[in-house]
Image (cartoon, rainbow, N blue to C red; front, side, top):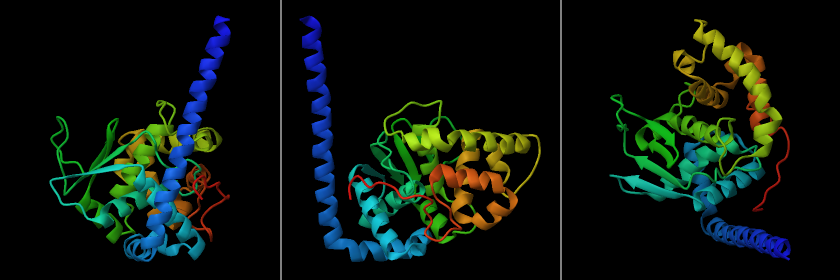
Amino acid sequence: MESGIIFILLVVVIGGFAFARYLRTQYLAQRVKEQYEKKHKSYDAILQEYIPYYRKLDASLRDRFLKRTLIFRATKHFEFVEMEEEEHMSLLISAAAIQLTFGLEHYLMDHFHKIYIMKRDYHYGLFNIPFQGHVSDDGIYLSWNNFLKSYANYTDGDNVGLHEMAHALAYINFPEHEHEGEDEGFQYRWLKTFTNTGRAVFSRMQAGETNFLGHYAATNYQEFWAVCVENFFERPEVFKIQLPDLYDAICKLLNQDMLKPGILLHPVFEEYA
């Protein structure tokens, strides 16, 4: 009898979570639909102006990208520290996250509810050096002036938006972490391949080998990953020439290839389509 009651309670709880998820999905879909219908032309113009990745997409992929960006933005609280918020700021920061996760099924990074935006470099904790951005358990932090500079110069492999979003994605998916928002495809399908290839390159760099990724990539493995992401998007040609196996591993991990027409390697199911 007691076990039957427990089973019924479990069913009720699971059903409650499923219903709550359904309501959230419907709410987000409606909210995004309204925003898209009202402002998709102006949002499209903003993304085309600032995000080179977006400009390269065809019309159907730009449409998909914009909708994902609006959904991501709707799920986050953006806190502007000592600066005035402007609508395009949260749109562009959300676009940086979507650029990284465009090939993944789970792209909302649900573990992170808050994104903090500072005007410029800032100090964090007991560190003496200024930060351009960082990721911690309570949120994603970015400096707005550096974010804009990163996309204005999109050929140097230095992009604080992509860098910190890469840290956020690793925080959710890499083996040492177990967090809400994990993408099973990311975690199990190609992570081992990337790790095997990446660890070998990283070890050689720590032993003194130099390559186009630069010295900072040898700081630790998390920074190596984030620098790889920056260069994957901004300097794919040289990446593929110098480190072809590592480039291929990231392509498979992110389900994207910057040198392939259409970018996506495989189609992705859209929950909020």
